[in-house]
Length: 384
Image (cartoon, rainbow, N blue to C red; front, side, top):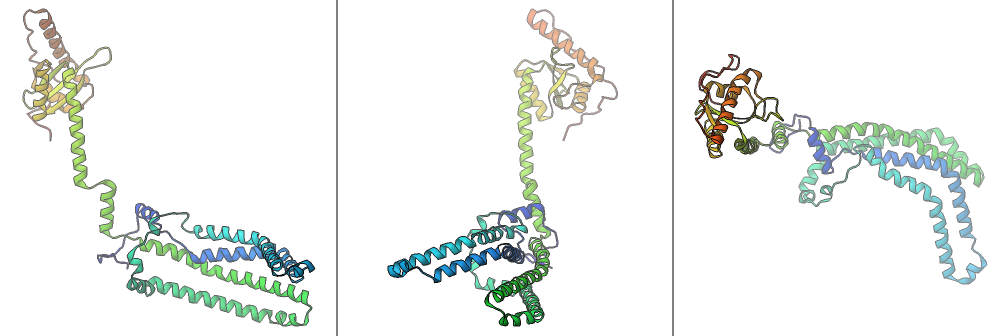
């Protein structure tokens, strides 16, 4: 069982976040056997398709190169060098389609497992990579033994396949000596191409075993222990102390925003000390009065202070204050069961405004407000 640096066993499968971070660091599953197989199969296919035309072209280029003109011989070494350069350019141009196909496959074949990824972290110089002790540890590790076993298996498969091909084609190979130059060359090329294809097919078994092994090894290297999972969870969801601080800041922002609504309230209903609920009603925009601020204890004290500072009426009505505090949310309209009680409160507020504006006797605050049993809250409970 794989162990972490601190000795804990890595028993948990890697999470999506860990896989993504490994990918960003350039650590993905790769199979060299799959890439080599792709190159060999591309070379075999290219030789099958382009081989005859390429061979004929190369023969013609060699023939021209070995039969220099009289002018080239008379011109000395410079003309011979130019002829040699032209011959090399012609040969390169002739081989260009096959080389281009091999270049494309050399770039794309490694991406068949793991896909495309580019990371500057993988290019960074790390001192531990230059540590001989760690290098020897990698050589004699489980992965090093697996690579050795894979190399031996590849050698064994290729050796057995080559031996069987030689045994099968021994008669054809020996018969080439009795043939003319052109038939012998054609027969030798056919034998080599067929042998190359068979050897490539033998490597399919190696690649078929290496691909799932590399995928499994990649996931084994990224396995996690319980501590890794806890640390990742903290990074993903945030550390408890940070989240607590964020919630406190959010509550403070919401409280400040709520306090800004108190001066625009019509009335503040109090308990008189434990609770305070600020109500506002605008008939043209609201279907019912709305709770714009509420609080208990110190928050209730601040609400009462702001209301007094801005001339918002304060009404002591403990049952209604408790019912509004416990039965409504901030910004919510009051429930229908409290319409009658709040209507009496607003009637008092409007009469108080009229008295302040026109003078006269002060209105009497309502004392026996109807609060239905389903909205009534007993006692002087405070919120947490």
